[in-house]
Length: 191
Image (tube, rainbow, N blue to C red):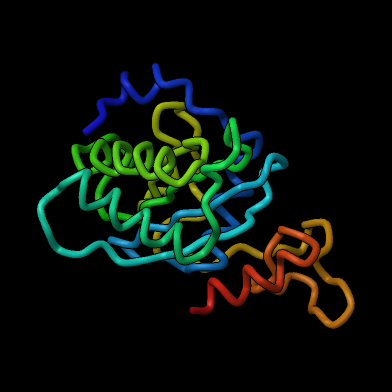
């Protein structure tokens, strides 16, 4: 388990636009409490792959969380172990009940994310909690009220690329990632 001070000292790269990442994952997966979403971002912070899964009722254990995260990463994207330095970054959004402050469960998820990233050849990215109060990037102090646990997905009406040919403006099913990856992400998220 990691303490908030250890997480901050680990020099986890800051997200340039955490609200966009949170909104994109929230729209794709529509998480409910006890749902974890692991996402892989490219160097431009576009979501390349993501998977959501429900936390099983068990003791708070970083090893169990790491194994669950690794299984999801292996399912949605090949490892980067052959690269000298990681290019892609994994982030974890955990939807839970309670307040947005750090808990021991968060510390176990943080440890699991850091270890899973090492074993999959990824950079360890942000750990984000999503509660009824809103979202919070732990260790950074950044957050917002929307989206929140149980809120409907936000409209993408103002996003670049939304409202293209064959799509309704503001269609929440349209992810912000562009190009050929968008179709792949929709298929992965639908599984």
